Image (cartoon, rainbow over all chains, first blue to last red; front, side, top):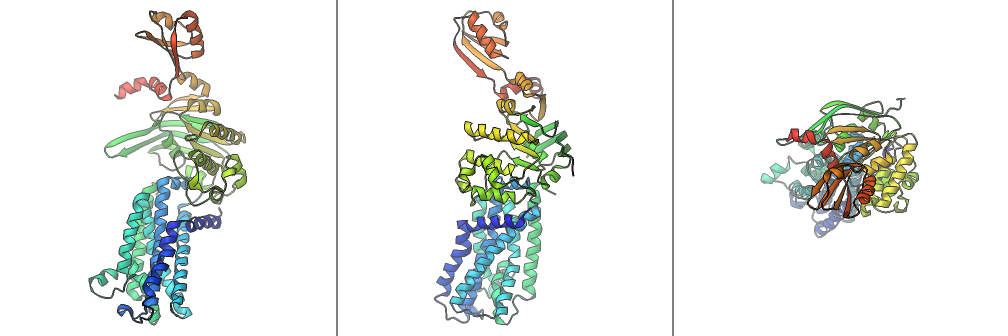
Length: 244
Length: 305
């Protein structure tokens, strides 16, 4: 089979999907200019030690990338509901290749969201070294793994009708607690935030403070969510399709 | 190289559990299809046709029994890209043109047919550039047929393929299917139209309530279930005399009307009018498959009730 051609069409479908464009690409860019624009000269946003343009650049890139990853869940739920999933199961496409195509598509679109925000950030004066750009991007890409697994899990648990609102609510909560809109630095919110994967996505911007990035806690939280959600996603898939 | 073999189902059983209720969808059926044969799986809704098809494709695991598809397991045949399938229900994914969708599916098979050729076969080359979400029901069916053909399968499985098609599309569909089968491919299609089985299959397997009730040439099956009913207003007539008319299986009086169940209604109606020129308000109705099955399996129904 020709995997490249198959993935190319998956990508084409995504690019043509309006909902994806709005949530993953247009919305974060517009919000970025609205929020970070007026605070352009603020050098220490809410005690984070980071400038407003840098903080929100990563915050909204994380938001867009999160939406891009989770949108696979909607795609899987729709394909299940319409019966397309069954059609694919009677072709030589293996389950592994099916998910690989979905995840690769999600990562490509997440990268597009990151790229756009990086350009916008640069326009508002964000300056980082090449190494910092790279390690920050690396952390975000690793931090997106739990979201890919979560999308597959929800895609197999929920119907096409239910998944839209569920995802919307989930992203809103994860974004607030993760610090997309304002830094979460103390109190009960902080305690909750530190065990959420979205918090660590936004924390990727801390590479600008001397390259430490996540630290042990961050790696542990992201790894734990990745493992647990991947196991749950695998179980949901097998239950849903009756495959062992 | 696996030798070309057809389809072999032995003692298949499938029971679904929904809450407290048990639905015995398939109750131990044996079906075999030789390579190159076109076989109709005929039966009313709820006969177990779709469950049987799901099992032979590996979409559902049987509780009991064995399945051999093209000489191996269903999963192996599917993974090798040797099976083309049109399932009963199922929409298309959106945001692609018809040509793109068929090309996307072609990418999954080891030896696909040429996309343009398949669009032509399924008579959708005129809508190749249209988005899949903007198709009519009949067009969607034809695209799904193209998807079933694209892998150049040795076995084609079609579950109620003409549902939602207009008469013209139906004709074109079956012509394409015949051409495909003529190239030595094995075809199994499920239908609840006796006429489709009669016109396009070499053999028909008749299913009712999860069991195979008949298996033979379509003409034989047609003779079994293809009865018609003649109704007419004809007062003061002797039932015994009606029963003696050629082609009549049973006769009944209902007030001024007579109801004749016939195995050959053409013969009966000529004789009826010749003998009783006063007969009027004539109506001829073909018995639906459901009705025919109810008659065929009447004893079993009473037992179950």
